[in-house]
Image (cartoon, rainbow over all chains, first blue to last red; front, side, top):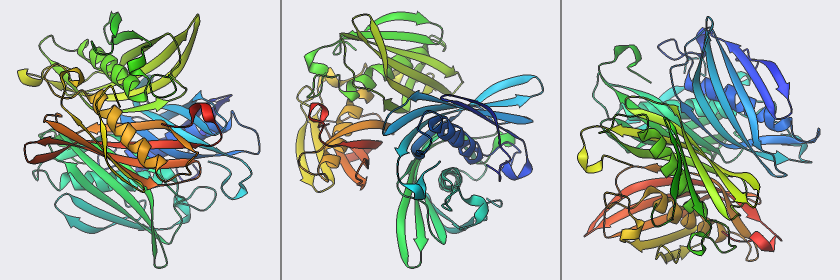
Length: 128
Length: 128
Length: 128
Length: 128
């Protein structure tokens, strides 16, 4: 997240928003944010949302995610929202939405579906 | 791809390999490659594989992809393979595999399924 | 849909609900609705939602879908909702939710993400 | 599987084939096999493949799957192959391929990616 310059702008139980600004290093050849970069931030938003419903000492690991790219990610800044659809002892299912913010306009540009596995007592990999 | 330091190591009709080395900026908190970074390179490998079966002037756009993370992406370098499962006039379906290379060991660490849309005569967005 | 006994219970622009009742032929070995059957109805709900935003003569084809199974599909009846996330000339992205209804309780049991391709002037395959 | 008339034609450790014949009840309006039906059989092939790598008393549950529909499922019979990509104590990742058989021609018509959760000591839901 440091590499991408993303910041946590909202945190509630099962809900996380991460925001980041347009930067040349995050773009593909037309100046839009690269799909993989958007996936990276959405995946993190989903992972933090998962962590927020779990015991403090637990960790989560993404086991799979799917992203649909609805429109070019074009804007000054971007908000990636992660929300928990179903908490579980072992499996936590989350959903993400990415919005491009261009002046006072917001546009849904990507959706994610992400499955997390909860990890307990496995310190070596105990976090997103 | 420049940001990630990825290089094209194999290119045939419908088949592309991209390789990159471990670097601190690409990792999550345990020193493994971040899932989103792996997705970025796999998505690019799939996109280039799609381009390789299309007319020169055409472009492709990922409309969706899904990644399964099978094992921590731990190694000195990584090879992401993209292959075309089904070429088509409008839709090209591709598959990706990511291998972690650790000394003389290789391990499958992620698989991707990626759907591309072919773009013709749309210069503004005519490439991955 | 005839095989499954599903019926259309709601239709608005970009929104479709299909309902069906529990029946032995739709279940797996524990008496819950089989995941594939749920996928069938959700896919249809998404397809009809896509059709509802398109010109009358057009058709749609699912090119891919993903389903997350959140809980056993246990109940007397089931409601599958399909909604259009993004209409498009070529690609229509939709989302589905399946609810199990057990007495006066409703429970979200599955979510779907489905990508449709619009078909025009191709009578042979011009519908879901 | 009884409802669909599917039969097990190959079983090895981590590999399962299920075959079924064309039948009117399995089709959509153009006489091709409905995507949801294909998903049902592919999901079962993946589930059985997962079971084949697990202890006898264990069960598996699909937690999510994604299917890509590459071509209309047109033929006299169909073979759905499930294979284990990664066995695991908790999570088993599998892949499926569906082929349409038309005379002496075979065609890849769908691919699946399916994540299973292993269940132990939970008799009520201890199988696909």
